[in-house]
Image (cartoon, rainbow, N blue to C red; front, top):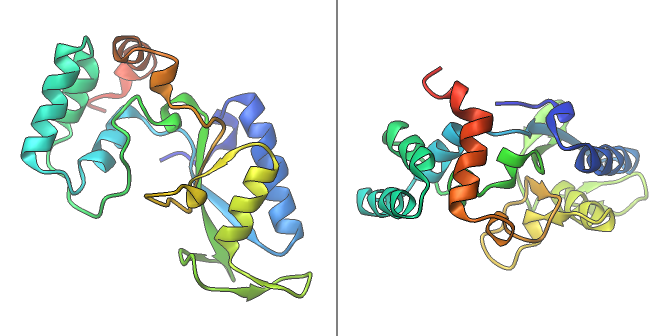
Length: 187
């Protein structure tokens, strides 16, 4: 897991640093915990809560559409258990492209994950840290997962509204992921 903001695409990193600084100035400290995520890490998260049938269907679809590398990554990570945390298969998350970030809300040096808890801010208002983070993200021209209509992902922000599949075919994504991450598989 990478927390290094320097691994983000420069234009996104610049917006993120400005946004995080503004949150801190307002009394909300957000701590980065996921910048770049490898296809293998994404596969582990995606496989959580998925049935064997769903997993096999996705592997078959990838192989049939020219994405053998991504199919093998999903297959090779093996069974994973836990709550559903992403809808994005490997390669289709902006985390693999350096254009997404996950943060947790930091209260007295402890991670806070609540999207309901409120604290009194420096301006005297009571606010939830994730709400401030999301609103500040949007103010700086980025996308906040906590404001999505469904499957709210409060820790997640990304640079673009569009999906990766609106720019590249799955075969092109496969080639890009293999070129950039293949050396990491099995390590």
